[in-house]
Structure formats: structure tokens, C-alpha cells
Amino acid sequence: ITLIKAKKVSYPSLIVAVVMVLSFFFAAPTFKYLGSHLSERLLVSQVEVSPTLAQTLQVGWLSTKANPFFGSGANNFNQAWLNYRPESVNLNPLWHLDFVYGKGIIPTYLTMFGPIGFALSILFLVSLVWLAVKALRVKEIDATSRFMILSSVVTVMYLWFFHIVYVPTQVLFLLTFVFTGVFYATLKQHNLF
Image (cartoon, rainbow, N blue to C red):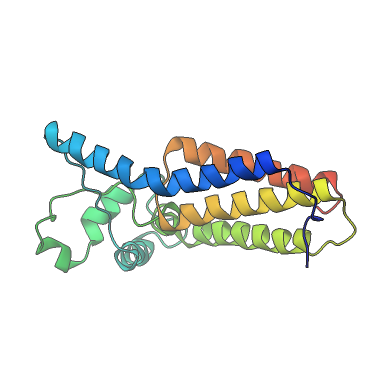
């Protein structure tokens, strides 16, 4: 199955593409070295710690027992963490840390918004995947439209997957909603939604 009809590629654009890919592979170790060297010289270190997915879901489950429908409330994961964290956390050196979010923003929704908010989040993600599969199965579409649909599907799926496994910054959160809007607009433009 070809998504875009093959066209003849000019040599200058092929050379630029190859140089870009090779420079990425050769420059990445240099950037890593420079970053570690600079942080050592400035005596700065960064350690990123978050609860595991199992701990996040355990806190969410225990929190929903106390607040069965709507959870502990928006931005109250830290209170739920203090009340329901596993005992094994109290025995390790990081026992004193308060976490504002668990492992990923979507799993944290179980604690903050309860089973109803979590189910609505999952329903939204399932409908997004369903629309993406439906859009990718359309065959009678021109190459430009196919490119727009494919690129918006890949971008949106990547960004929402990122929300499941990680807590994004505000910029990534904004980009996720912008590209979700682009995805829906692309589907609407081609009468797929």
C-alpha cells in the first residue's frame, strides 16, 4: 500500500536529507557530552522522580473509595498521595517528596476526577483512535489530503500517548490540543467526521 505516489527526487534535496540525518546521529553524542560537562562544571544536577504507574493507580483506587464518583478534585493528587501512598514509599529515601501528578497525566485523572472523569478521558481517547483508523482507511483521496490526514494522525497519537506515559509541560499540553483541533478540522474538511 502506498500512501503517497512516488515522485522523482532531485539530487540536491536527497543530499540535504542525508546530511541532516547523518548530522543528527553524529551531533547527538556531542550534545550529551556538552550538557553533562556543563552541569558538572556548574555543580548542577537534575533528577526526575515520579510514582510508578502501579502506585498512581493504587492511589487512584483508594482515593475513589473515599470519593466514589468525582475523585479528590482538580489539583489534589498531592493530598491523595499523602493519604494513600503505599507503605513501601515510606521506607525509601524519597519518602518526603510530594507529587503533584502521578505517572502520566491520564492515569492521574483517576485520582483527581474519579471513575467518571477517568472513563470520559478513556472514551475520548478511544474515539480519537477510532476516528484515526477510520480516516486512514479512506482510499479515494488525493495525495495532499492523505498527507494532511496521516501527519495529523501521527502527531495527535504521539502527543496523546505522551500524556499517558508522562506529565507534559504547559506547552506540550497546548500543542496537544492545537493538533487535536487540526486533526478534527482535517477530518471535517474531507467529510470524515
